[in-house]
Length: 329
Ligand SMILES: Nc1ncnc2c1ncn2[C@@H]1O[C@H](COP(=O)(O)OP(=O)(O)O)[C@@H](O)[C@H]1O
Ligand SMILES: [Mg+2]
Image (tube, rainbow, N blue to C red; front, side, top):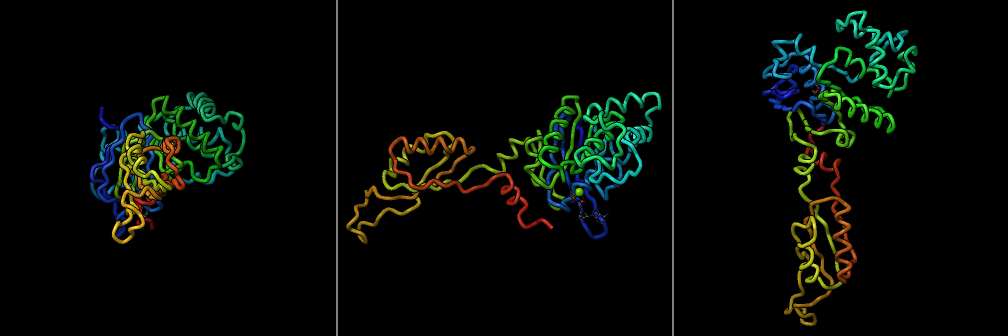
């Protein structure tokens, strides 16, 4: 089976602005792929090319093996597209909105009535069937918009920043809905400029910056690649050697070393070279905070007098800032 999305050296220029620069994207069927990058990175441009709304300058975009430029109608049937803005629909009721878009996708009138009911049920808006769309909350509008993308039962959903502007509760509802869609067999490409907004709901992520894909893969792999280790600084009042013997055997610890120099027997004859006084140690650690607390407990339990234990923080957002450092517009 071909990947559901593949781009080959996809390039888009708007005049002198290079929005996409030989982008090579590969998304397996069944993934929830988080497409992450700061504003202006090229997310919307990529998505519009994949949906056939925008022509590439060079390179190729394929959906389920079909070239978007050569078979636009075929691709359009495979893809449901949710743009980043809802638009203005005065005097249109919720059911009319879905009926209208289903009609424009060529769904016959007889089938539409049932389809609208099914879609409203799926996105939990049945009770708003006769409400005006402009009166819905932002979260409800996003769910309605999502329902609309599914009017022609596409296998791939492309959602441009659907979580932006949602409160935490609406975001959780969106996440649950995406999970449900995945169980239904849909592949989902979803963009955001906030990494943590997506990391928890995706199976795969890619980070794009200035039209380049910086990293892409399964969430765990990418996070691991981005965050190979943490540096932990430890100060002990004594027993540094004991700590250095113990640390490498603890889970997640890759290396441990003394950073504060030993006393010099010539310059400081009052303190012997094997002085067991205060010392600073650095530890390379791979793992999360819970695992790190195990390291701390093991040290303390062995009788090493720890007076300082500080992780050089690097959470997801920090890693994202490092990867895209200084490049954001
Ligand atoms: N219609 C357009 N005309 C000129 N430049 C554009 C147009 N659309 C987007 N761009 C530029 O292309 C780059 C990528 O934009 P976009 O794909 O919208 O990024 P994102 O969705 O990641 O914020 C930006 O530099 C943006 O200013
Ligand atoms: Mg955008």
